[in-house]
Structure formats: structure tokens, C-alpha cells
Image (tube, rainbow over all chains, first blue to last red):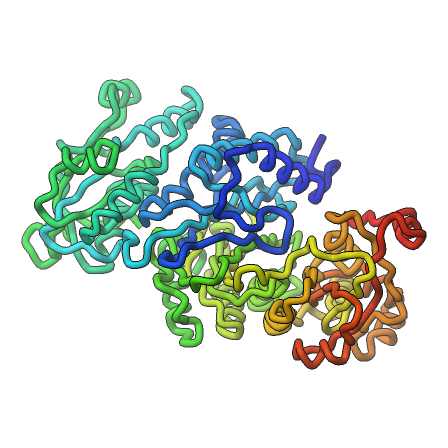
Length: 316
Length: 316
């Protein structure tokens, strides 16, 4: 059965039923979910509403040849939830705008949606609505809504020279997996874990942390984190946290592990800065995930900053 | 200059600057706008957050041959705002997910964004973020966030048999314009007015109004409004509010004006039900827009309901 045969409203009903069957996909924060002109969400009196979205197109951001539809769906919501994590927010709900050619098998769309619902249940972010369109290319645009206590959101624009730079988890694993899949060696199977708990714990510290999630790659996202304030960074490449067995796997794939871990992207770890004094081991305990100190923030006018500026931050 | 030459982050900066130049595009409700992992919006203590989205693809929902990019952008946000109107909500902000082939002229994208910003300023709904992707087909997915006093949102599921059915403005004009454009006679120039003020006034009545906006066409949207409760409707076709000169224009185009006004869609008027007793003239005054009574809600088990069921509601 294809999308053309089922029809768009048929598929919407099907998605609403699939979402309704997932018990954990409900929440007290959802006042009105799928099926009206819009969804209604509860935001607490001392909270702000947080919103972000992310679009993924077949052939650009994913390939069904090397990735199952379920993984594509899971990765789409996980990546968007990572934006909430990077703000220190808790999830309230999500919208899915799905677009597909009329000839797309309904089974493929079912699996994409099942992937979105998997992550929705796992992270307490119910699917509350969305949109369905015919299009020439398969795509998913996921919008996430969340809430964060007023004044405690983790922003990008609060770093200062001298701050230490930290990252959660490890870097480079997603890039290596994608590289191998592009070369026909294995499929993309991993799904990033949005660091929601770590982001909320970091926001709760109340310590002027600047934060971003690593989606484009360490160097590129570091530039996003610092450029608004005209700052630079010194990164100690030897301290970058790599996945177990990463260097051997990179050697087999004939790729430089340091370059891959700095440039690769899609790790969805949190990259953040804090004033000196916080140790990585204490932060690991507080955030509930491995935290590594990888460098420090410098002013562009310092010698180190000029050096970095000369070497260039041309990652965008 | 094309999107490929400018680059994705170059275009994001360009959009952020264009949005910043529009003074009216700012708002006290926006705590943090474009440029971070997510946007932060203020929702008042006794309000719920309202979210909806809408996707439009070139060749499916619009054609740049018969519609300027600016009009496409304006229509995209206006249509999404209409969903907020149909909930009785006030706008807080919007996200734009824009996708385009790398060869797209930046000028075209500038004009699309300018159209979104036109409506953003007009209706007090600042652009607070979004997403930019390469894709094979030009598309816009607009997400709107709004707020509505708790318990006063206009939902679809509150109609009862005997309720009267009303519609704002006129029906059929958008369909006639599109039909003419498809036949090469003129371009699509009109932009629907989201009935935000009318929706809020209707919600403030506190009178169990069920409400939807007319996007798919009167008959289809009426079915959406009533099917959850298993209800039907009797519509008096002679009372449908038509635009001035509509019947003559339909005669010239050799199309049935009643069929076009019932089936056409994209008028983005509010279609709502109220218990008997409210007159159209009083509602027109209260809602600040022409309101016409066009029929009544019937149970499917009544003779009229069975008749309607036999004649079919196969509009989805």
C-alpha cells in the first residue's frame, strides 16, 4: 500500500492511532494533542517555553540505503531533543512534518513514525501534532517544545576569556559510522542520546555556563558558541574524549582520528564553558555523564587568540 | 548569487539581519530569538502554549510561475496563523524551516523570507528561529507558537446537535483565483487574513464554540469539525457568503459558484458552531468581521443526518 492509496488523512489517522497506543507517549503537560487546529501545552508559571526545529531530507541528511526508516525517525527526534538539552530544558511535546512522494510505501512511513515515537516515549516528549504533504523527496521536520525555569536557560552568548571548555561523552563515533556506511561498510545504526538530564543539571548549577550541542562538529560548534562575543579557543587535541577502539577503527578506515573527532559532527554531545574552578570529575558526577575538559576560552586579542584566528575558523 | 555560493550559514545570518531590521517583528514575549539552539518565549501564568505547523512545497502547494516568492512567504505564515486564530490564541512567535536546491537564487529566498516577515510584523508574530536545508524541491515549513487563556481555547470537539453553524468573511475567492492562475489567467496575489481578532473574541465569549479554519474547503473542514462526535450538518447553500462579483466571475470561468465556495479551500475563514440564540449580526459586531449563519448541526441518527451520511462526506 502506498501513500497515494491510503491518502493523506488516512495516514494522519494512522499516525494518531500509533501515537495513542504508546502509553508513555502521554503526559500531564499535553492539554490537547493530535487532531485539532493546534496542540495545547502546559508551561509552568515560572518557566519559559522553548522551541526549536530540525529538517532532514533523504539524500542530503540520510539515505534509506544505509539506514533503516526506524533509525531515521529515531535520529530526527533525538537530534531535536538535543537542542532542548543544550538549553537546559525539559521536553513538553513535538510536532512532525512528514513529506513523501505519493509512491512511498505506507510501511516505510509507519517505520519512520515508529522511530519518532520510540524516542518520544524514551524521553517523555509526546507527539502532539504535525503536518503531512506530498513532495518529490522524503523528509521529516521535527519541532520540539520544552520548558525551562526563567533565567536559567543555557545560552550561547555567556562565555568569557579564561573559561574552561568541557564536553560530555565522546566525539567522532557518529562521523566514523557514517563514513563507513558511505563506503558501503555497514549501516548507520546508532542513535545519539540527547543529554537532557545533563543539560538540566548544568542549568541548575546557576553558574553562567554557555552551551551548545555538537551537531556540525566540535570546531564548527565551538565557533558558533564563541563568535557572538568575538572570542577564540585553545583546544588540547590530546584530551579529546574518543570512543573505545576509535583509533584502531580509524586506522583501518585510513582516516585521522583527531580530524574526525573535531570535524565530524552528529555526536549531539553538550559542549559548554564554565569559569575556572569546576573539575571534570565533579561535573561528571553532577551531570550523570562523563565530562572532559578539553581547553579554554581566549580573547581574540591575545596571542593565542590571534593564532587561532590566523589558523582560521572557517567551518561555516 | 545562489544558495550554493552564499552557503547555509551565510543565509541564516542574512535572515537574522533581515528579521532584526523589521522593528515591529520584536516583542516582549520573545526572551531569546534567532541564533541559539532554541528560542525562548514568555507564556503568562494562566495561559497554555499553542503550537501548530504547516508545510508548503513548490509544485504541490504553490508554483513560482504563477505566484511571487513574496506572496508564497506571506501565504505560508498567514495560513499557520489561521490555525492560532481557530484556537482563539494570540501569536507569540514563529519558526521557518526553509529548504531549497543549491542552485536557488538568494534573491528568491530573500523574497520568500521578506513575505514571511511582512506577515510576522503585521500580526505581531516575530520570527524566532528555524532551519535551513538543501533539498531537491523548494519548501517552507512554518511553525507558529501562541498562547491562550487556560480553558478558553476553541476546540473542534465541542459541537452538539442543534448548534448553529457560522462562517466569517466570504468563501470561494481563493479557489477562483487559483483556478484562474492554473488556467494561465492572472497570478495568485491575494493573501488570506488570519482571523486572529475574531478567534480571540469568540474564545472570550466563553460559549462552547467549536471552531476550525477553512483550509481544505467548507465541506471537508465541516466534516473535520463534526466527525469526532459523529455529527452531521445541514448547510443552506443559498446562504453561503460569496465575494462581490463572484457569481459573474464564475460564469465567465464556467465553474459552479456554489461548488467552488463549498469545495475550494484556502479561504482561511473561521467556521464555528454555537448553541442557538446568537445572531449573525451581533456576532459580526463582537468579532469585528462579517459573520454569516449557514446551517445547523444534526445528529447522524436524524433523518437529515442520514441523508448527509448517504450523500457522503468523502472529502478526505
